[in-house]
Picture 1: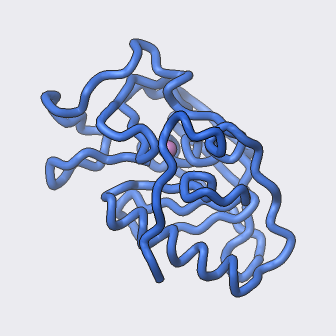
Picture 2: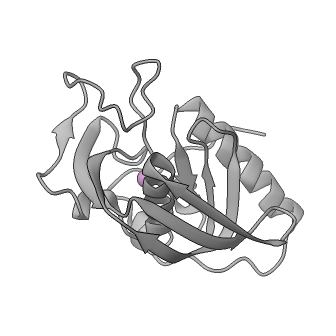
Length: 170
Ligand code: NI
């Protein structure tokens, strides 16, 4: 596995639609391993393939409960609402306030290309929305309700995974 370079806002690859993954290949397996390693290296709670320059519908998420790999994910159910802080590894040093569903259920394929459903509340629901948005070329910055803020001097919001006082970015 290897750490890949994270594409940052302004890179047009982050604005493009990703393509479905029709079958698992060695190349895709390596990509997924690299995405996980890259997410952990940068203390992210999620990472989408376009963030490492690959226009495939793949996301990885870990909100502190172990890695989740989702291929061709789709949100199939949402409920409720949460308003809180969000960041993105592709928008370093910034955060913003975004309203998302409190509960999200997604359908996807796992690494064995077997259909799975993942459901989550709170941070996991937020991460699912954020990462799946990346696959349509959408960044949270366009949903941020009060513009972007610098991360340096704010207190961690408890709904983000800040157990070590570090920023969580997706
Ligand atoms: Ni992101």
